[in-house]
Amino acid sequence: MQFVSPYTVSIERKVIDQAYQRVSSYPWDALISVDGWAYGSDPSYMKELCEYWVNDFDWPKQEEKINKFDHYKTSIENVDIHFIYEKGSGDSPTPLIISHGWPGSFLEFLDVIEPLAHPERFGGDISQSFDVIVPSLPGFGFSGPITRAYGPREIAFMFNTLMTNRLGYKSYMAQGGDWGSAVTSWLGFNHSDHCKAIHLNCLTIRHADGPIG
Image 1 (cartoon, helix red, strand yellow):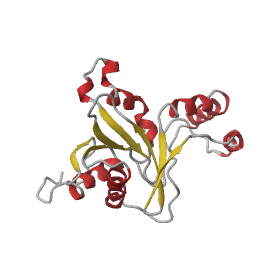
Image 2 (cartoon, rainbow, N blue to C red; image 1 turned 30 degrees about the vertical axis):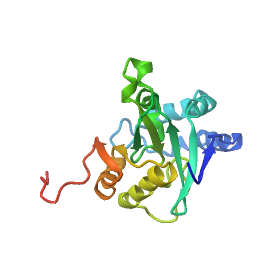
Image 3 (tube, rainbow, N blue to C red; image 1 turned 90 degrees about the vertical axis):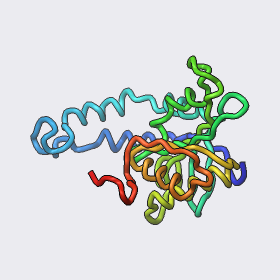
Image 4 (cartoon, rainbow, N blue to C red; image 1 turned 60 degrees about the horizontal axis):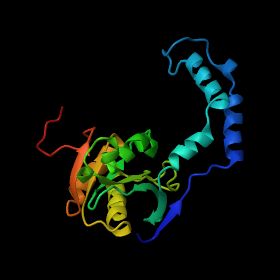
């Protein structure tokens, strides 16, 4: 790996306390008197959720779960890109980059990284293992803030750079959903010399002669 630095998720206690204070001091009495979801989120549900967040949610436990995997950062196009990198078992795991959507984050994939990278631990065949790379989209999660909008085609360029230039893969596969499916589609379209297969759970781009509906 070149131009890549290890990263550990560690949120300062004062930042957590500030978030708790903002949630605790929300002016619930200022809300209009309405029950249910007719005008957006159910106020009763949101209040219960916020009380859980402040009183019961265990952030250190979440940090421990997140840091179970190796995290890294690298600068691409002057944007810090955060990603998880879990090397797969066996002699020749297939490189796989997985892209999240909006609203979303790399957290969506924490429970599938290990089965993909180490299938033999879950009753699978070690020959079907993957090197799993899970980046945070620019401006999301622990990737750096951005000063302008980045479309999926440009993000695909950045993620292809991550896979080839930073991690050194000559070929890889890609998966994505929601906004990540648009990024993944462009990986397959613009970078087919490296991206050999894609899997989508949301179709955002169609062939010029494809169906409209």
